[in-house]
Image (cartoon, rainbow, N blue to C red):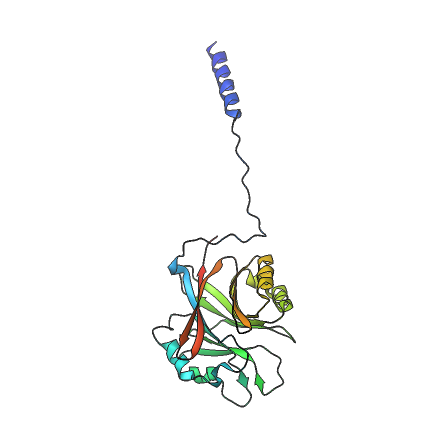
Amino acid sequence: MKKVLFMALAAALLCSCGKNSDPEKPIEKPDPSVVPAPPEEIISNNTFVVDYFTDMKDSESYFSKRDVNVAKEYILGDVGRNSVMYFFDRMDFTVGKTSPAVKMCTNMKIYPFFAQQEASGSGVIKGCGIITKTSISDFDGLYDSSVFMSGANIHIQCGIPGRTTFYTSRIDKIAQLTEIFSKRAQKLSADAVIIGRVKNGLEKELEQVVEGQCCRSFIVIGTAGWSLYVICPPEYVCRSAESKSLVNLDYYKITIEKIKL
């Protein structure tokens, strides 16, 4: 009798456990085609700074009327020394002349590179100077008749350490950005950042293309024909791009944070 009673109680218990007046809602999986919003709180230990020197014009070489030594002192001084990389937009290469980047780095433990941004063939080649304080493991680039992108890979010392490739490219046709993603989509979705300028009027299209590639974009609208843009993979976010000036050197101090999704 006791055995029968025990089995009846057990069966009743199982039945009561099986009934659920408020069934659990199925767990919604994140849409892999949508980049999650970044955390509102900034963790300063996970941030780093990149300086992008530009006047957002395309009229002449950046150092045609500017002193290279002012830039050199900035990089080695208290204000600029914490930046991980320095870009000098329109630091053009002139055949037969020493590059301003080389002059800046002479006898110093900093390393100059040149990112070509137009086809060769003239005495002056438009481009962007890149200066790092650490040696690089790779210098990658895309070059053809209309698409030019170059970048250096360096180790970032922050709360989430690791290597990051910093590219630069000038976008005056949105097809150029589409081509860039078609050739470097995997890298741009993982550990690469692009910093450059985009022609006025293309900003919205740039945002749409970047969003379609599940990456993040940050734009500062310019009024001289060009705007600043920053493109980051999902686990990076551009937090700010402050417009600064040192003597007559105009630049943006760009703060980027590495995040965990």
